[in-house]
Amino acid sequence: AQSVTQLGSHVSVSEGALVLLRCNYSSSVPPYLFWYVQYPNQGLQLLLKYTSAATLVKGINGFEAEFKKSETSFHLTKPSAHMSDAAEYFCAVSGSSARQLTFGSGTQLTVLP
Amino acid sequence: DAGVIQSPRHEVTEMGQEVTLRCKPISGHNSLFWYRQTMMRGLELLIYFNNNVPIDDSGMPEDRFSAKMPNASFSTLKIQPSEPRDSAVYFCASAPASGMYNEQFFGPGTRLTVL
Image 1 (tube, chains in turn green, orange):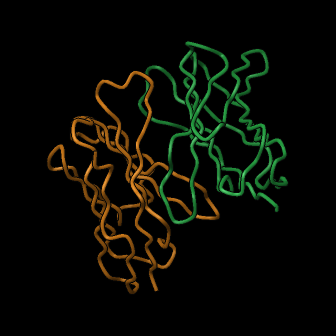
Image 2 (tube, one colour):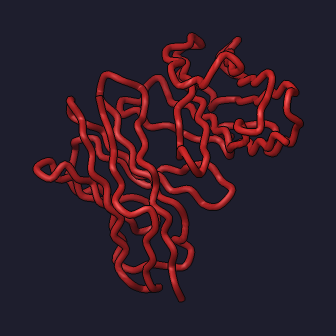
């Protein structure tokens, strides 16, 4: 079984500041990990995914995430926030034998001018 | 390439009415998922199909909800009768047969309001 915990349902950063969104997972099998972004009134869009090929994963829009097995974490970062990054971000986990994704509760990112 | 298509985008109905939500997955994808999103419960998996066969419907709230996938290019989620607590955004997602990592592609959602 898999589960995901996203720490902080709301995060606010100033434009140009570092973005850090936290995700911790639990999985009984080697996990596949994902970050999705949801803009207002839209569906979820894949930002990046970890598939065991590399621990540091780069995604779209300047985001990246680092898989840390010892910490069971997959935190999402971006060096410099942009106003257009304001959205809700979801971390998700899947096991190799299951097609389902288990999603976290989401983190709403606000970018302040 | 067309993404996942959902219709209608918005639906407003009265309690007790039947509601049918529709989804067209991405061509070539063999897995299809229905989710419900609410402020209180977040994103919930309702049911998923693999090769048009329902695999896991443990997330379907109750017998008022039913889902079908008559062919590889179409699925419906039906609520009969609808209740105000069914108000939510319903998402359909699909995944490719060749996808090794279970990545899902989401549609834009249907916002359902039951009065």
